[in-house]
Image (cartoon, rainbow, N blue to C red):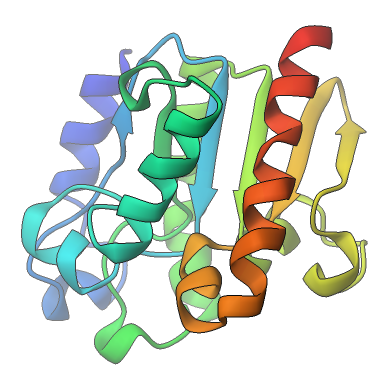
Length: 182
C-alpha cells in the first residue's frame, strides 16, 4: 500500500459525522519518503476548502519557518490527526479522533519518519499523553519506542498571540539540531 492509496481511502472516509459537515477530507501532503512528519490537530477553514493541510495563515507561517531552516515543504509530510474539519473549528471529539487515528498510523507506517513534529496540544497529547502542558513542554524532544518527537506550539498560536511567535520560531530551529543526529 502507498501513501497515495491511503490518501484516496481517506477522501472516501465516512467513519464519523465530520464527513457530513466538512467540504472534503484533508489527508495530508508531502513526500512519501519524508524524514520529518508534521502533525497538527485538524483542518481549518482554508484547508477544508482547498483539501490541503496548512494552507491558510498558519500554513504560511509554517512555510516561512520551514524556509528559515532550509527545509522544502515538498520534502516533509504535513498532516493532521483529524482528516475532516470539525464545525466552527471546535476541538475534535474523542470518537472523531478514534475514527481518524488508524489513518494517521497507516500514514506513519508507510512513511516511517525519523522525526514527528507535534504542532499543538492535541497532537502532543496524542503521541505523548503522559507529559505536561504544551506551555511547559514546547521545544522539547522525546524518544519513545525508537521514534523521535519534537513538541511545538501550533503555528496559529503565534498568529493569535504575538508573544508566542518568537518562541515558535526559536523552537522550530531545534529541528535542524535534531536532523544532525538522526
